[in-house]
Image 1 (cartoon, each protein chain N blue to C red):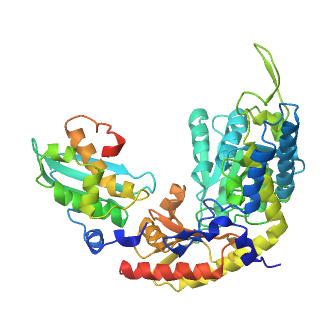
Image 2 (tube, helix red, strand yellow):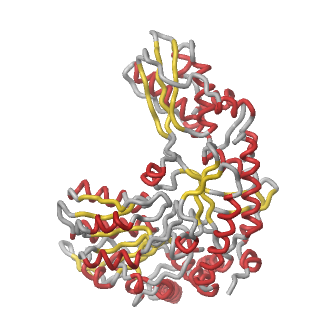
Image 3 (tube, chains in turn orange, cyan):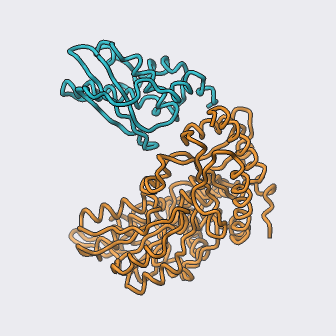
Length: 409
Length: 135
C-alpha cells in the first residue's frame, strides 16, 4: 500500500517551518529523523502525567512509568523480530551498543592474534571500538573491500573469511553509500567458521523490514533518533544466550541483584547492562515511534523510499557534472544518495542549498576510510524518509542547477 | 544562512588562489585539519627575525577555507610577526568581507590556525589559548 505522504507530513510539526522564507526541505534523515506529534506528545504525557523513576519505587507513578518503559522494550523486540524483550538492551545510541559488545563480549572472548572482520564502508563507530580493542589485545583488523559501485566485493569477503575471524561486524545499510549488504548470506558464511556476527542496523531498521531471526545475526545495534524517536536512546539486540554469558558494561544501580562490601551479584539480562537511571522519556518516545512505523507498515516504508530513490537517481543524473557514488540498483540500496557536483566542495554545496531551505549532509559522514577509498575529501548526501516527496527532489535538483551556474561548473 | 557568502571575490580567490604551492626555502611549516570535514591546509613560511618574508599554502578545502587562506597569505606577506599573532576571527571576517556564520566559521579560520601554529612553532612555543570572544 502506498504511503499517504500528505497525511504523514501533517503529523510532523517541524515540516511547517520556513527557512529564510522558503519551505523546509529536509533531506537529512540519515543523520537524524524528524519526530511526529505522537512521539512528542508521548514524552509530554510522561512528564505531565506519570513522571517517575523506573524499577525502583512502589508508588503509582513509578508503576505506570515502569509499565510504559517495559512495553516499549516489547514493542521494539517485536518490531525487529527478537524472540523475547529480554534480548533488547537500552543504550544511548548505535555507537554505545557497538562499544558495549566490544567491551563486554569481545574484550573477554578474543585472544591476541585473533582476527576481526569489518568492511571498507563502515561508520567510524564500527571501526574505532575495534581499533581500541586491537591496540589493547593485539588483535588483527581485516576489511572486506568494496567495488567501485559501492557494493561489497564477494571474492574479498571469501578471502577474508578464510582467516577464521572471531567477529564479523558490518553495516546492514551503508550510511554514506546507501548500499544494502547481504547480511543474511554473510552471517551464514561467518557462522560456518565460528565467527560472531554483529550488525550495525542504524540505517536499515528505520527504513525497511528487519528480522533478526531471519538474518541470524548475534547482535544488532540501532539508534532511536533515526527512526522517529528522540535522541539519546539506542537499542542493542543480542541473542539471549550471549547476554547471559556476558560481563556487565558499567557498574551501578539497576544492574545488580545484591551488593555487599566486597562483592555483588549481577542482575539478569537485559538489566545487567543498564546501570543507572535510564533514559525513560527516550524509551517511551521510542515506543510511540515504533507504533507509528508499525501502523505505516515497514514494507510500505521501504517501497515509498525505493520509488523516491529511483526518481531522485534519474533526476540527479540529468544534472551536468554531478557524480553519484554507490550502486544505481534500488533493490540493493537504501534511501541515501551521496554525490558531488563538479569540483564544488560538499560544504559549499550544502551552504548554497541551505539558502534555498534544503537541508542535506556534507562531509565525510564519519566514514573517512570510505572517503579515502572513493578518493574524495567529502561528499554531499541527500537522504529520504517517509515524509519526503518527489516535489522536494525537484527543488533539490533546481538548487543544484543554480549552484552549478554560481560556481561555473 | 544565505549564499551571499559566495561573492565574486571569494569565488575568484577559490578558483585562483594566491600564494598556492611550495616554498622551497621555507624555514617553518605547519599543517592542520578541520575536524568537521577532514579538510587540510598546510602553510610554509620563510620568517626572518620579526617579519613574514614569504609564504605559500596548499591543501584540500572548500571555497571558504581556500579563499580565506588565499586572502590571509596575501595579507601576511611582509607583515611583522607581532601583527600576525594578534589576528583573530574579526580580522578574517573583514578580509573575507562577509561572515560565513557559525556552521562555516571554522572553515574560514583554519588557515589562521595553521599560520599561527607555524609562527609560534618557529619560536619553539605553542599558540596560547585565547578567550572565546577574541577568537
